[in-house]
Length: 282
Length: 328
Image (cartoon, rainbow over all chains, first blue to last red; front, side):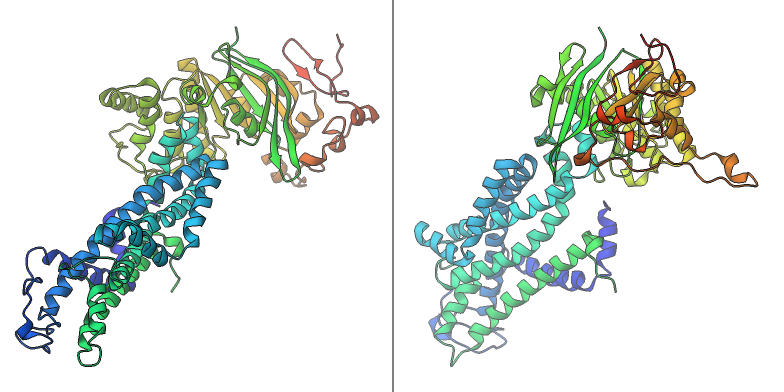
């Protein structure tokens, strides 16, 4: 059922996980946006004299082993996480959705081919394969985007196909066919708008997974390269100082956990809001 | 040359029991501007027949015979050619106006789509044509702006939008598959009037599919009574209704409930045709209606009855028609 944006927001404000998740995600995006203009200190600033400081009024969250400001690195890291996850989702939607729509429209051997290829991709654990891909292409943030993006493709293909198949059975598709439309036009003009809400929900969930994957790759040193800070890399570097400076690991850990939690809550809430049939009865 | 000629059309659908005959050797022809009713109970193949005419059957079904539209065999065309016929030369109205419109598309866009697709109109021309169509179907855009969504309209109004979509490109044939079944009686009347007027004024041929004999009587000149994918009786509507010959047609008529029957002091039970439509995989050898027919004889169960001429246009496929007439 279609509703206007205002109605969706109205419903959303009554949904607890939508509100809390939305606020957490919004904070995350705002922080990331802020980092384009301002961080308390430049993240490239190495100041060995002030290394491993505990939180103080000068460095709110302290400094790391190079004397860099932790808060600045967290803020800049949010920006990095967003870019990686965002582009990776773009790759997933850009390739996955057309594949899923094609599979649903053509059925038969085309469907089989696309879906079995999907299964093949799914058979490898995402992170292991991402490691493999970055190992082949070389570490770096672009390659980690590609690696994470590739694993978003089958996810979106599958969701799009499943949702599209159920739309194809609806009568208005028959009506559109009786008006002389081909499969391509129907997929684009009738099927896609009707499955958009499901894709949006999936995108928020994949976004959270993308952030986790990026942190994972960076932790292994395969993702973002210095001097660009990344939450995963901060965790990795903190490992060495775990016993005498545990806060170095705790801050990025909390940042990752809260962001992923917020996005998942938001995605959950959004699904409930967009699809009233799934809404739990209270 | 007739507008539409169906020759020996058979349709088989894939079911759990394999490929099953749903429509069985149908022959008929139709002239431009003519109105034809197809009547029969659920599962007699009416809707499948309509989908077959549009080539909209599932890909795993089998269609044999010929459907010749203005001299062109539709069944021999490739998918692009068929798409250029659908919506352009044949329009179709569906049963459920609630589900036959795309819920997330504005009605103006839905009506305009096929105009842009088939007639290659510009944006402005399309808008003019849509406005004209909305007027024609009784939804003047002063009260029903084109940016409404289907859920903002009532069932009858949605059916009017459906009709506007179907006639958007001035098709030569309009197929209406139970267009009023989902509507309440008062709205039903308006929609039927509208369809009939549109067909009259534009010279469109109309194929009206219904299980409601009243609807058929109101809208059509000729009628085709179908049972289990066969034509059992066909002729001018008035002739068939006044002088019905097939026991099945008679059964359909007796099954119409009458108001007087329930207000009588002695209430009568509703009449029904005994038994059920035989299942697809379990069709008897001879006449499919034999098991439910009060007049069936040994002969009926052995052979399929051939067409018998009743009058000039009236044919019946029965060994024991209700009226005796000289056979030629």
